[in-house]
Amino acid sequence: MRGTRIAEPAFRRRVGHPRPGSPVPATCVCLARNSGRARLPLVTGESYNGSADRGDLGELLVLLHGAAAPANTIPTQVAYRVWRHEERLQAAFRANAEDQQRRGASMRTFSIGRGTPQPTEIEETVRMWRDGNRVRIEHHGGPRDGYYAVVDGPLWWMWDERNGAHSNQDDPSVGSGVGEELQIMRNPTPLLSSLRFQPTGSSEVAGRPTISARGIPRPQDARRGPPAFELHELGTGADYYELEIDRRLGVLLAVAAIRDGQPFHRITTLVAAFDQPIPDDTFRFEPPAGEPIQTRTWHESRVEHVTLVEAQQRAPFTVLMPDTVPANWQVQCRLIRPSERPPSPMQIGVIYCSTDGHESISLSQFPAGGSNPYRELGDGEGWETVTRGGIEMRARPAMWGQAQVELERDGTFVHLMSDNLTREQVLTIAAGLRPAPTTSSI
Image (cartoon, rainbow, N blue to C red; front, top):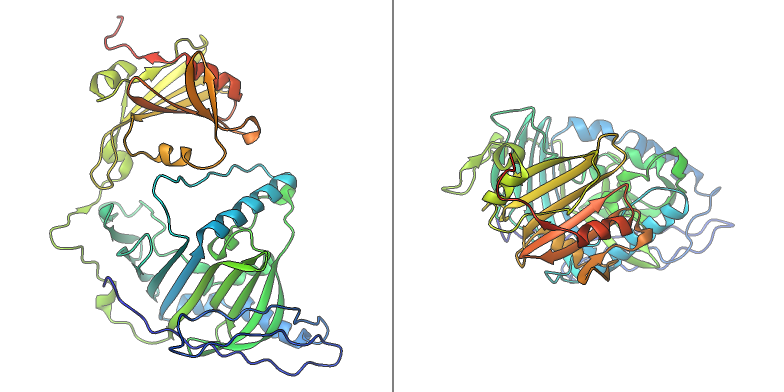
């Protein structure tokens, strides 16, 4: 399974002669099979005249409007190559978030940590088999290399190297999202509300004829709800998208997200077979030899509600608490047991909340110097080093919107976060942290 290679497709773009009053078609780069890494041809100039291409636009909209029906009723076997340029992708995401904030949206963004160096470009192949309510997905290459999952009605199974094998076979009510990735490719109908389409010509992807089009994001009105999530899988923050739509079924066969004239995310269909029988064995999940299937949920298997005293007695690090809190604050404490799959240390979560619900703060604690998700977030952008009470800490800027502070003290890494306290208030609490008691006063 690992290391499987799939033949590259050949792309052929056909551009008709310009119609009277239409701009000259843009220059295109054509790559033949075996000519190196295949690239989705990009239109580099204006190629659409609203009145001249009205018929093509109508055909395109009809295809997209009806794409959901065949995608959900016929057996499908596809393989996609997913490519992204990490630096450009993150820059586009940040620019989009800033634009939404200027329009009045309430948004918070998080930077990916730099603890583990990431390659500039990441590429993977995602293979999917779908027949009714049965799905199989495999990832080859990229950060999820080796991952595979099977869905059969309400039941699902998945495996990857880091987390092992998991399933809801003992409790079908437990969901997972397995089988839903890249669903915008097989059902692009939601894009009708988030993009304005401009036909640009004809092409062929994976041996199937396509309508080529440019999709320009519609302006978002923060008063009407959150930004269009359907664009997330295609690359958030693009100036426009170059799309190849299957002429027969209306599904997406290729999409490139472009910002400032450069692609930062691209999905290309390598193989596509529709309405062909799929062997039943395809949808049988087999974990690696000797790998047990874990059926308990993460919360059931790892989380305990404890007192601060119990947390201090059981944790292999010093559990910290605020020196003083208002009299109307109540406390909850959770102990999260360590895990080998995925590898994770013991964690202590302490939440203080006022009885009227207007003030709250959470403290997440781990052994200092180890691997933990908050440290990786903390290595990202947008943090400032500050000192309070002679203690050096890192904090999000005041305009961040959510107060976040982190520090190391007494061998413990602490991440403090509040949605309703100011940064200065959280810094004051962080500076006054002290060890929780080891015995009860009662």
